[in-house]
Amino acid sequence: MRTPRTARRVALLASATALTTLLAAAPAGAGTSGLPTVTATGESAALYDDEAGGNSDADDPAIWRNPADPGRSLVVATAKEGGLRVYDLDARLVQSLPAPKPPTADGAPGRFNNVDLVTGLRTSTGRADVAVVSDRGNDRLRFYRIDPSRPNGPLTDVTDPAAAPVFSVDQAEINDQRTAYGLATWTDRATGRTYALVSRRERTRLALLELLPAANGKVGYRKVRTLDLPASFRLPDGTTWHPCGEPDELPQVEGMVVDPATGTLYAGQEDIGIWRLRADLTGKPVLVDKVKEYGVPGTYDEETEECAPGTDPGYGGRRLSADVEGLTLYQERDGDGYLLASGQGDDTFALYDREVSEGNEYEGGFRIGAASDSLDSVEECDGAAVLNVPLGSRYPRGLLVVQDGQETPGVPDGEGGTRTATGFKFVDLGKLVDATGM
Image 1 (cartoon, rainbow, N blue to C red):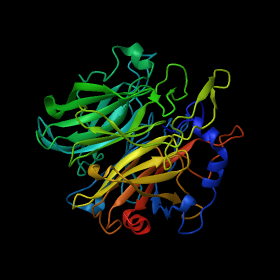
Image 2 (tube, rainbow, N blue to C red):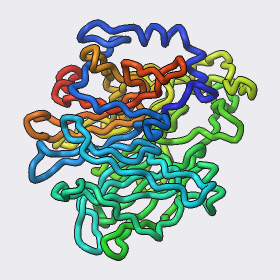
Image 3 (cartoon, one colour):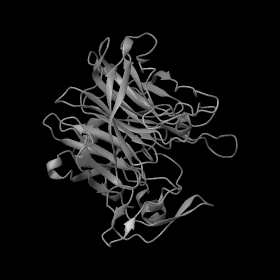
Image 4 (cartoon, rainbow, N blue to C red):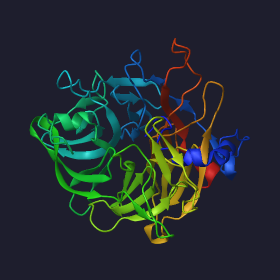
């Protein structure tokens, strides 16, 4: 979640000196803390989170491979109140779809948070490739059929109008925005059934939703079960730790991905770390890695809306700086591969072994630096997607797309500041593999 550094950012306050070092400019070919640096090959036009920009805020991408012509594959990305954006492999805008308007005058508008894809989803009019979106504003899932031959744009809304809220009981609760947030899709290879895993904003709850065909090619869903991750943690010294945050706010999950080969869900609890659990939400979750700030106490100040950090007891991890975000899976044909996660606090990306039997060991990381004055580095990455297959001549070894939380150069807002600008960076996967040894 890319938000101002307020109460949820205890760690950044607690380790300001270390972060200053980490954020220093890296020399060519090497990132801070010994991590390699790669550069993007392209970027989308900046999105602006203000009235003039349609309150558009880049968040999460997904990569759709065109089986008939891989060079004409697409990137589908969320822009919160700005709806959906569809880009070609040159990062040029192909289509823009608005988020739904508020259902009532005092209702919350649509706000598209995360996106994932399903290939060959069963519908009442046949199989279809579908983009699945979490609409945080309306606490629902939205579905968009992908057809590159359509003259008016490749995506068409096929959401069942009868789709119910995922977590909320009424519009008043929806307006409080403890709604559908993080998202990952999963097709159970044993049954052929397709699901979405959805997290709840400002809560630790995950929901398993089965995707179902509805009339006229529409897509709906039903809730199968839910699971609550921990909100407090027993530390080695015997004390109980609650991550500092605004009153009544629990440590939420956003970044999620499912390993299709094993039905394993990886979920990034932003201020805690990465969980591994069964995608059907049964069994016991395992904490794969913790953020560096795990266990740091904090006291919330209502006047400043900040957390005053206490002494770091040293129980955190060594690789991820909160928030942990942007989980995506790099798959190799032989079953090997990596789980990729972004650490917003120090603008790095971590790589973990895909093999559960090996404990998802940490295998290294990287940063995305500036390629030029006009093609800047990546900061505060919120979402990521990787596809390890050829995508035409431009990306013959695949593609990584990441959200960039601070697009530069800054654009004046007319009031002495700069407009909040975000976007998406396109990284040649072959160059990343060569740089990191993936």
